[in-house]
Amino acid sequence: MTILLRALCIVLLVAFSYRPLFSQVIDNDEVVSVPSTDRQMNAAIKRARETLPIFWKANKRPTAGKHSFSLKVRITDGTSDEHFWLDKIGVTDGDIEGSINNEPRFVMTVKFGQRYKIPEKDISDWMYIQGGKIYGGFTLRAMLHRLSAADAARMKKELAFQPK
Image (cartoon, rainbow, N blue to C red; front, side, top):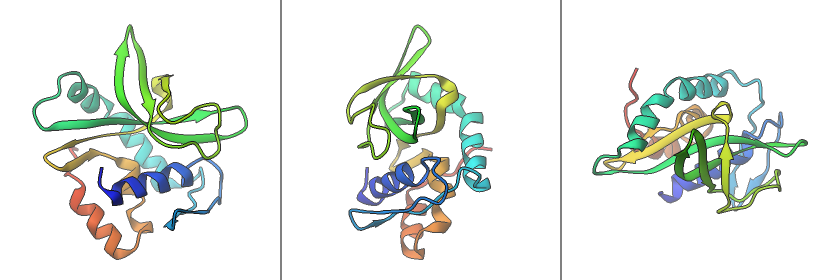
């Protein structure tokens, strides 16, 4: 992943933790508050969930040039909720599993690199890269208006057209 994409993933991971009006600065990257009632973010999650079949089809039989398959999932520890990107996605006997690909900030019951089983209902986004472009990434797209114009323009260049 590019540095900008990785930074944006960290911003989204922390900002969209279902902690209304939370904000913090991490590693000089701006973290933007996203309330759990944010309409754009909730619409992005809904769209990501509606289009999951696209992800599953691409992940099951990846063609040349498709890589970096990731799911964003909500994980809770009973006190806090946090959204994590999982990579190395697999499905075995109907169980979805991936490796935590972010350092936890609030939910300390998981750790970076840990294999984690998730129910499909907790998936909040998906993405993969093909031809240098990001497919999916609906929550990333929902945050573009919160970035500086320069960062948003750079990010838009990395985003692929989305199927209707």
